Length: 471
Image (tube, rainbow, N blue to C red; front, side, top):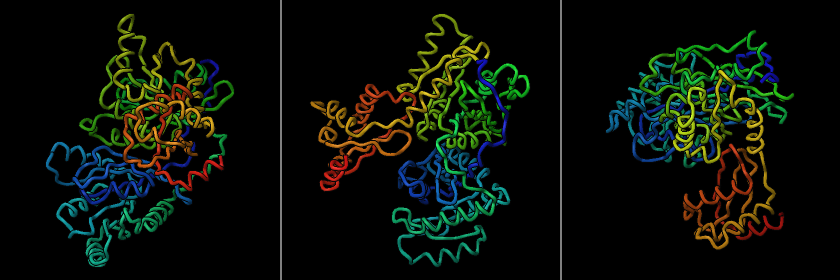
């Protein structure tokens, strides 16, 4: 990797992406509000209290500001105490490191003891300068709004109080205006629009002590690594914050984002580990491509699966590095690679598993070439006429139900590659049918290293005929 050259470390090569956390007791409409704010369904919406367990994040881009929105499980009582403790820990994690807090309360009910419990936690755990916006959710009718607003003015918990109804989009624009106002008061700025000339941003993520910083060091030239190496230590969690490193490879620029590792919730017992987890969420959202680093010395864990799922759900390109492969020989090496491929099958069906060693640099020589290939796949667009010919050949004579009746498919102008199917009844489309379609799409067009998404839209005869004419 002698042709790689490192220019330096930067606390941030682009404006920090602020974090906005939605906090509240269970069943106050947090997930429905989250989905409305991001403009798509990502959180699980349910009437069963405590459905959301893990932190779910998504970047929100507004005209004046961008921010990372984090949805949390509820703080409060559920039937499953272990579930409750895990969810509460996740919520506290988001609470402690949020830049703005949106506190949700069910407007259809009186203020409960659990609501007051959440208020006490917010007062104790949030940083002093962090503003709180109280969102009275499920405010579909006006009868209780004024009384609840008066009640909350007396609690003195929030800088702003408003009523919202996410399903009916009531108060959503006002809420976004308040979020932007507070972020501006905290001196956050909107990141400049991308011109297309920016170097790919590559987040290097994984559990502690799998060798992420060693990988970054191995990608530098010998001279530059001696001048300013990334801190490497056998003590898990040494890297406290992410470090942006700009490198050149074959006259092309890349930005590597080295993050501290993620630990299991039960072991995240200090500020460094909690900050590491939140920084990883932010790094993934700011990245174009995620490199998940695993250790060949130990089998993949549930936490590795969660990290891989985070990258896929965020629509990022993905490569899996199996570091410390030099510690395995012969059949153990082959079995180790196969076990990782099988364990992470939900991503290795499109993301390469690259055996490597930060010590010997095995497997790292072609890494930037693979990154370039993944980046091209993420932005690739298939001409509509070619796409429809492929679709007709792929579904002809196949038992694909509603999809077999589809006459038109197009690629949306989105990243990752997103394909829109016009079907008579989207509810009748089955997940297995979409998996078949994805497999056929990858066989024909590749799309290595990038997730693929499908959107179902009901067929509208007049609109469809217009689309065909435009084509």
